Length: 67
Image 1 (spheres, rainbow, N blue to C red):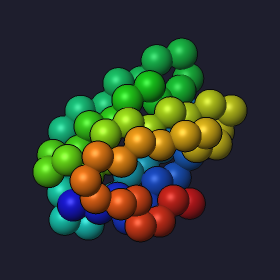
Image 2: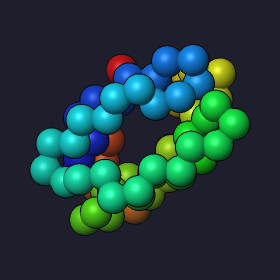
Image 3: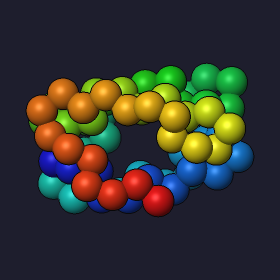
């Protein structure tokens, strides 16, 4: 249940590849990702602004790689 790759383009998440979990819900707002919830409690929130990952809160797992 780790996020293997996140490709961010123009302030939006273009592709999310999850190794062992699935992305249950994505909330995209004003060209930025406000919250991403992953099933098995891996990534709780990813806040994307200006095409970069500004901050991320991980509940139990870890983000193994962010591109």
